[in-house]
Each structure stands twice: as structure tokens, then as C-alpha cells.
Image (cartoon, rainbow, N blue to C red; front, side, top):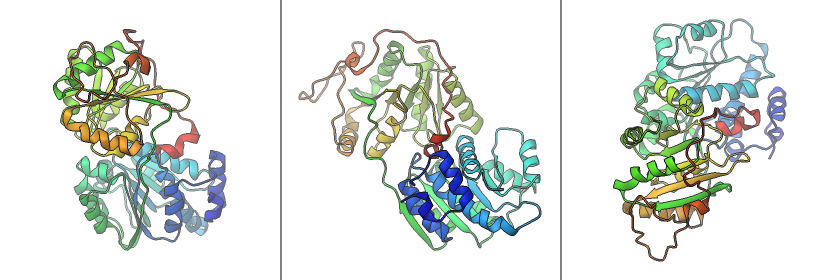
Length: 421
């Protein structure tokens, strides 16, 4: 199927062609026809599947056709609520790219900055508003927003919003919207809390679920260290100090664990910061910017907080804790080895994580090579049938020291917009 076969408005097709997009991704192919019919939708898909375009394109199509004969001040017709500033900015950019040949106006509002400029843009009139929950409620309470004319609402990354404690904010926002509207609900996972919330927000809806990526990135070299929990931080410190990687992304399963890793690394003289749901938006932004600009070498993240991170020159990802959901492993290591670069993904596996490792290997249909125990970290490999490989043979530098930090800002290539979500 091609985008032309979906019956989209010509200005939108023209923009998609200019972006180099001819064929929709699975989430787009399944969602767009449903949304063009005006139905509510529950979409289950991870970041990187093209879901921003899956809801953005049909919304632009509807509003373009509806606005053809309308005059007067612009009124908010579509609202997209997303948990973080980073995601909000990416979504705004996507709407502007896909709607560049329409007369539709998109703007974004988020906390952590003064609201003066945001309010000024709203007063000028807006068709599509992308917002984070806190700032949205603030401006609503101050009378700067009204949703009397709203016809479309999207809740994006719903599981992340719940993890960050936005459940009550979401309920307050929904209560302010007209009952007659098209509602779209997107989440990477579908826990019970998300199912219950979706039933309260959506009317009669259709569901589209896209299976997580099954194959690992081809250019990513993988390896696993069998290490006790007590020795993980020591191993992490040695690998970072001895390696030549300028940017290291470390995944922790818990927020508390992420904070502990930061403290331990700082004691070792390694620049590190953490991002997770308990961090404020300004704190998350500061940590991510410091990482991109090379001010810190290591960023520790939980899986949900890591969504939306797009950093070039990321050559090493470390799974400090193995994920209990095997698809998450694929998503984690896919953050390195992008474009023409190669990458390395190393995992730390404690005894009680062996079942997680087996599930991961079953999913990716290959064994993750076992690394030789580090000379400074005493560990025994319990599985004697495993023949460890030398870390240096897996592309790791030995004692090369740290390179001078360089700017690692994300690539702004337009052709990647669909993959950013």
C-alpha cells in the first residue's frame, strides 16, 4: 500500500512525497483508514514505529477539509497531550512538516519556561495544540485556553504519563473537552491501568496493536557479563574508564537504581546524570542537554523516561539491569549503531536475571556472546559450557582513556522525522 491509496488530501500527499515517504509503516497502514472514518482508536505501538504520522496525518486531513470554507479567528480543533517537552517538540515538528502545504497552524506548550510567548501564540489563533499536562492545565485555569470547538484529542505515550504521575491531570483535561469528539489513545504497553483508563476516555473504539521489533540492530555488537548484583557498579565503572566511548547510555530497571548508579559513578569521578519519572521536566531537559553536548559522559535512564531520546554518536549502550520484557532489550540496544555507525550493547546479568536473558535470546533467535570476566572484578561463570570472548575482540578499547567530549546533538535530518515519533 502507498500513501496515495489512502485517499489523503493533495497538500498532505505533496508534503509526504517531499519527505521521501511513499509507503506507510504497519501502524500507519492500519490506523489511518480507521481514523479517516472518524472512529476512536486504541493504538499499541512503541516509539520508532511511525505512530506520530499515524495520528497526525488523518488529523491534518480532517482539519484541512473542514477549514476549507471557514473564516475568522482560528480555534483549537485538535489537542495532542504527551508527557515530556522532548516528545511534544518532536510531535509539533511532525505536524508542521506534514501540514506545510496547508493553512493549518500548530503550536506547542510545555512547562519549565515562561508562558508569555506561549500565551501570545495562542492569542494569535491555533488549529492544533501539542501540550504537556501540567502547562496545559495551568493555561486552562488562567482562561487562556478553550476547547469548545475541539474535534480531535490524542493521548500519546499514555503509559509514560501514568508512570510520571499524570493520571489525575489527564482526567481533569478530559473533563474539559466536548463529549462529541474523536479520541485517540496510544501506548507502548498495555497494563491493566491503561486498559481501564482507555475505557473511560474512548467511546466505541477499534484497537491496533503492532508487535515490537523482533530483530536486533544489525550493526550492534552484543555481549553479556555474568556478574553479581554487588559487583555491577564496579564493573560499570571499569568499563567506562577503560573504554574510549564519548557517550554511554545506561539502562536501569528502577528510578531508585538509576539514582544510586549516578552517585556511585560521581564518586569515581565520572560525569553522570539520571532521567526518570521522578525527575522534574527541567531536570530531565538539563540532563539530556548535558549528555548531548558532552558535558557528562554517562546518562542513566529508565525505559519509559528514555523515550524520545535521540542522540547521535552513541556507540555504547549498557543494560545495567536486564529488562524483564524481552522486546524492551531490542528497543534499548537499537539506540546505538544508527545510520552508518557501529555500536556496542553490553548487558550485566545477575543470577536472578538468567531467565530474562533466556527470554531475550529466544526472541532474537541467537545467543548473546558471553564476555570474559573483567580482571578487576572477580566473578565465576556458572555455565561451564559457555566460552567467553575477550572484550577487546568485541570492539572495546583497552585503556585508551577518555576522548575529549564533543557535541552530540541529535540529527535534524527531515527524513528521520517518521522514526522519532
